[in-house]
Image 1 (cartoon, helix red, strand yellow):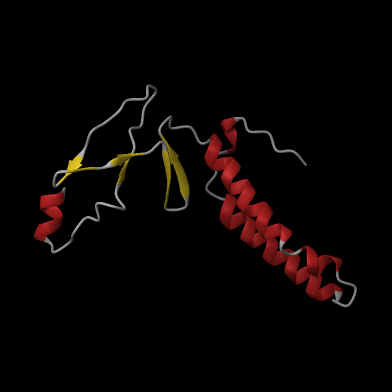
Image 2 (tube, rainbow, N blue to C red):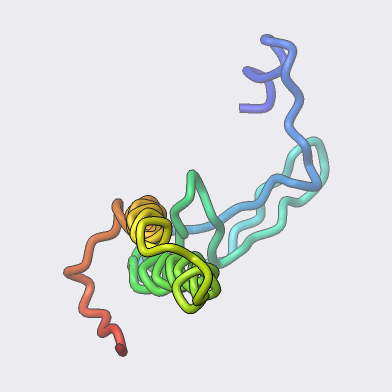
Length: 117
């Protein structure tokens, strides 16, 4: 991969590049890039989704629910404010739902994660 990248004028950053072995059993891998051993990690975020070595989406679902809850919590001041009109509160509620969908849309809820309300 490193040689192919160099042909196109690209260079792989050794400090930022990590390795994850995906499968049912944990295995230690020794992958070198120009005599530098790459760090093996158990999970990382890729294109907004949490990739884990056990291929389960439970941690990703919990992470996305946490992100959506954080976004929703930031709207509390608007909803509780007495000097904000009902129209503005309804608009902020609509925006909150859109933002929460952005965080939660790609989730697979069949993973058996229970959500406390």
